[in-house]
Image 1 (cartoon, helix red, strand yellow):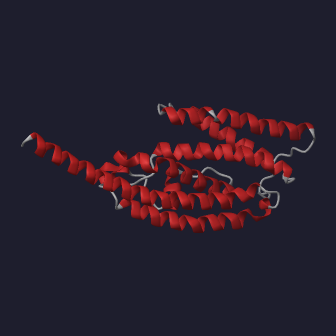
Image 2 (cartoon, one colour):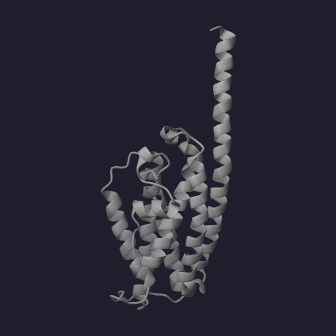
Image 3 (cartoon, helix red, strand yellow):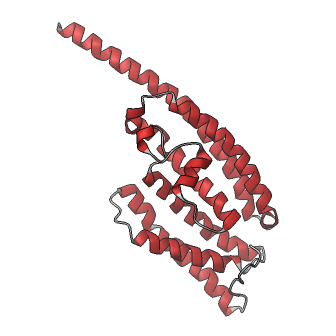
Length: 227
């Protein structure tokens, strides 16, 4: 093979790779748009009137996740199964955002931590990397940490809305979450930095609870009480 033929071959490879990446980017743009729509729906829970309509907001968000499943189904067809991590950079950010949104919906519904398998089910994907497109464990954890920041904001807005029991429940949940993350030996630098922000979320929520306590408004949540 001559030098010219070799570089022609390389150009063909680069062109094919660029076409794949362009196809992926188009699908990811659709995912990003749907993620923004879901976020818009869920952001309304921070408004004083939003607390009364949480079930409907969660229902609307779950309806939009059906569109996410369609996009992810399309994304699966754009690259070979074994090359997931080669193109991972294209959808990593939006997948983390979607993991956060799915985690937040489940928390609003149950006030519990959603498992990675359930998030994958909501998104219409897998947890097994051998199956190609899947929810990487670090992307799931990043989504959970984003949710923690959202809950610290929710704790503050709960007080504004007159819901004084919710910050205590959020505080208990975030403390348990922090304890869980302390068990992990995180090597991923971006994930580690995001985890470092969890301590500020914990502190922010503790300040809310303390303020409620000194004002005599903090009451421990009753078993079976309204959420």
